[in-house]
Image (cartoon, rainbow, N blue to C red):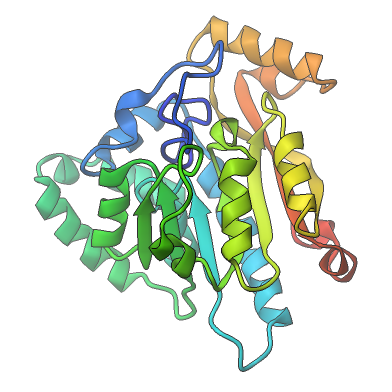
Length: 300
C-alpha cells in the first residue's frame, strides 16, 4: 500500500492497497511505487510539488504527543502503523530531523544519481541514523509494493514492514502480531483504493483503542471507511483546513477535480481552481478522546 497509489490517485507516497485501476481523470504513476529505491519517486513528484507527507509530519507529531500524554507510564512504547507506507517516507519524517524538502533535495542530487541501490541504502542508513530523534516511535509499514517496503526496512526507517494486499486477502499472522500494540494508524495517500476490508482486520488485531489519521483527497469519499471505524467505537472528525497535495498534470485532471469536488458539495475556489488537488485530514478516535482533546488543538 502507500502514500499515493500505483495508479496515482493519491500520487504521493506509495502504492494503493487495492492497486487496481486509476481513478477516472487522474494521471497514473505506476512506475514510481515499487522501484528498488525512492529516487524516481522524488524525481517525478518533485516538479508536481507533492506535499502531503510534509503536512502530515507536523500533525502526526502532535497526535503522537497527545497519545503519549494519555498513555500509562508503564505501558508499551507507541506503535504507528503506516498504511501505504511505500519507502518509509512518513517514518522518515516522523522519527528524524529532516523535512520533505530535504528528501527531495537528497534523492534528486547528482550524488544520489551516481549511486547503485546498494550504495544509496548504505548512504541512507548513515544519514538517518545521524538524524534520529531522541524519542522515535516504532513504525510498522504496510504496502503492496515489496521493493519499497524492503527498502524502508533496509535503511532503518521501518521497524517492520509487510507487502500484503488486505483488499484481496486477510493479514498474515505475522502482520497481526506486528500491529497488536498499534495506537495510531496513518494514511497520507491511498484511501482511494482502501475499503473496510483493509481496516477491519487491522483494528480487530489491535489490543487497545486506536486513532486513525487519514489525509483524504477531496475527490474521494471516506464514508464507507468512517462507517467501518465507527463499528469499532471510533468517531470521525474532518479537520477544517485543507492541504494542497500536488499540482495537476494537465487540464483533464483539473477538470476532473473541480467537477468531482463540486458534485460532492465542496467549493473548489482557491483550492482545485488554483491548480492543486487538495486533501482533508479525517481523524477517528474513541469518543472520550474527542472530548478530552479537541481536534483544533491537534490541527493548527
